[in-house]
Structures are given as C-alpha cells and as structure tokens.
Length: 231
Image (cartoon, rainbow, N blue to C red; front, side, top):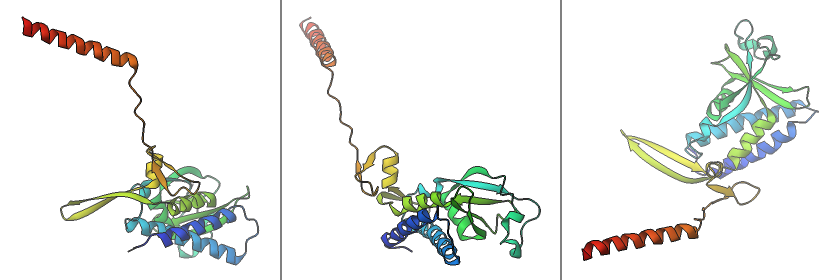
C-alpha cells in the first residue's frame, strides 16, 4: 500500500518527459527500446497502484484515453507468435476508440503483445493487448498520449475526500486538483498545474430598479396592514 504518493508521481513526471522525447526520436538502439518499455510498464503499474491505494481521484479510473483498435485476422496468436503482431492483427485497419485509464493500465501490465513502432509520420507508438483479449483485437497508443497521461497523474493532488461505511465495506471518494479545475470551481495558480485555488463567484449588487420595486411593494404591504388595523 502506498503511504506517500509523491515519489510515485515524481517518477511518472520523469517518465513523461522521456516518452515525450522518444515520441519523435528517429535513432533507436536496443537500450532505447528497453528504457521505453520499462517506463511504460512502470508508469502503468504506478497509476494502477495509486488507484488501488486510494491515492488518486475517484474519477481517474474511468477517464477516457484515445487509443486505436486493430482487428484480429485469422487465428488467435500463440506464445511464440507474440513477436509478430502484424501477422495476426490488421495494422492497416485501425479504428479510433478510447480506453478507461484503469483498463488501459491493466492491458499494458498484463500484455501478451507489447511492441514499439516508429510510425511513418516520424512519431512513436506502442501496440499491446492482454493475454485475455489477444483473441479479439490489438490496442495501440501514441507515446505523446501516454506522456500526457503520465504527466496528468504526476501532477495530481488530492484536495478533498470523504468516506462511507455500508455493510461493513468502506468506500472512499477522492477529489483532485484536476477535478476542481475541470469542473470550473477552481483554477491552477501556475503553469505547473498542481496547486489550484477555488473560484469564488462575486454576488452582483442588486439593480437599483429592483430595490425600488421591493421598496414600493413593502410600502404597499405596510399600507394594507395599516388599513386593516384601522378598520
């Protein structure tokens, strides 16, 4: 169980910067591939660990992340087939879709296929699928999008929480700085997008015409009461 989330978030921020650099890198070595896979795997695990330890926003697991889905062609790949995903999935017929953060991390952590590709547009992406889903389709995601996700979670700060107990089970609801900003109730105080300040709406002064209308109405009420009492 994570006690202090800061070191985990710091590592996510470092991984985010490296992924962003690799997203347009042309020259790759075996060590580069190793470092990239390590960062993605550890980043996905870190996010899931933060979620499981109630150290993230309760909305984070369902946050939607853009991905690409490639259909299975032919039979389900076996153990020795995992290094040739293009033989079993049609990488030319990808469709844009989304995965929730929780499911995305699980697919990466339990990946049966995990392959990094240098795209024709000089960007880098990774394709992956869990052992459970290998007979359905293959997922793909750009390094830039993963970098954005790691950066987002790395800059997350829990600013409010509540707990309930029902039938012996405790449920924790966390709200983060990002939740507050995205709901319009707060704003970031600097470009690092960590510290947020609440937005307090100023109550506009009453219009003079409204005040006069209220005064006239109150005068009428007092006059009516006076007439009743004198009658």
